[in-house]
Image (cartoon, rainbow, N blue to C red; front, side):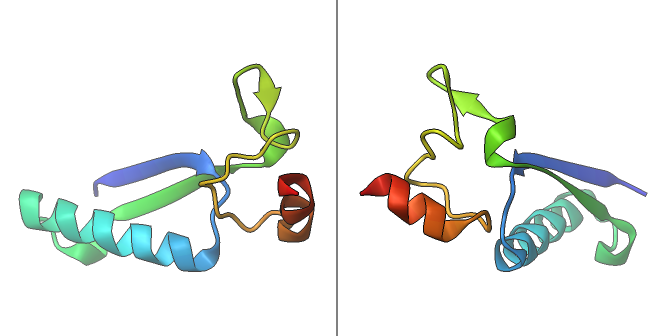
Length: 79
C-alpha cells in the first residue's frame, strides 16, 4: 500500500478533498495502483508552528494562504 504524506500549514476540508483527489488520481495513473489502495495523510501545522522571514505566520500570515485558522483574525492583520 503506497502512502503519500502532505506537510502543510493547516488546510480547509475542501482543500484537503481537492488535494487528495488530485494526488491519489495522479499516483494511480502513473503507478497502476488502484486508488483504493493508496493512502494520503495530512500533517497540518498551525500559524504559530511555521515561519518565514524570521516571523511566525501567526504574526504575519502569508497573503496567499487560505486556511481554516481564525480567518477573522487574519482579516484584521491584513488591514
